[in-house]
Length: 296
Image (cartoon, rainbow, N blue to C red):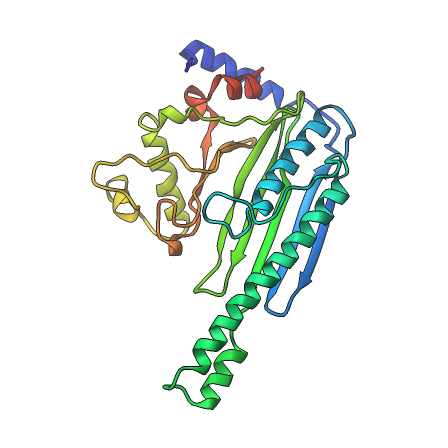
């Protein structure tokens, strides 16, 4: 992909600084919130969508509803396939769309969590090594399932907006986990989603920036890790490069934010490693589409 020259980089940074001085009316949005419990589960939605009936705002809303359909329509599916059919009504009616997915999702988590509770009870009742009191105590303290679906406005700038797709899922195990599609960056002028801000083929050239960011993340967590020690903390084979995160980095005033999911490159106990790479360092590795968005 095309790269910026040194002179072009300097000019781009000047344009980026100038762009930050612009003003624009806030993106008008509406928050849709749902919350309920079943016998063995809790479910909640927090969905923020642009209200515009046409133009960029409407295009952004349509793309966000596609994200909601993908996340909720494949709930608890770990292979290809859907959990329930897609909404067949008018996707311009966000309330009807979300009401449909809410009803389907609530019925689904109710059924799956009940099946899980029944299997747990059957196993406990048949355990001859437990007393009757122990069985009752265990069953009374069996954890409920939980699913929290979040699709909300995260960053707003005169040239772009960023929405966050992040779900929390807990199915009665040792701990829950964060899923979702991560940060979604949109061009405010066109409403088009920017699929890649960083060139996917630059992982080998961006290694020093990833190392620096991860070391800073661990330092902020109270763990001093040198670049030489870093790979011993990560799920990497000897000589293997640190991959770019599955979640696309997103822009802020300070730079691009990189975030790795739980277990993506490190143990669960190390959290979700996140760090900011300043624009003057990341600019040579931006895709042409991202460079135009950030510096025009």
